[in-house]
Structures are given as structure tokens and as C-alpha cells.
Image (tube, rainbow, N blue to C red; front, side, top):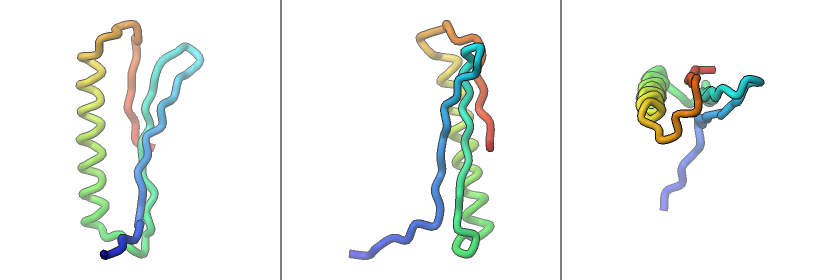
Length: 74
């Protein structure tokens, strides 16, 4: 069985400000020596797709009590 070497990770932080607004902040940490520019481009594309899906899901959510929502790249 082949082993895999971790060369980076992605994360999503769910934050709530003092007014109760929800914010998602996402980003990634990578080993610069192991990751190519092509890898980073694919990773950014993947994260942008997740951001768009999250925004769509928020618009269609069942609980409409949240008034504000944002997704930002850290």
C-alpha cells in the first residue's frame, strides 16, 4: 500500500460577531517546497466553488433568522 505525504491543508472557520452575524473564513496552508503553482490554482478553484455553493445554500436555508452572511478568504 502506498503512503501519502501531506503537503497542505484547507480550513473553514465559522465566526459570529458581537451582533450575531455569521461569517465563514477559509484558507489553506501548504508546504511551499512541495506544492506547484498548478496545485495552488486547482486548490483556489476548488475553494471558490465551495464558497459559491455555501452562498447558494445560505440563500435557500430553512432558518431565515440570520440577516447577514459572508464568506471570505483569509
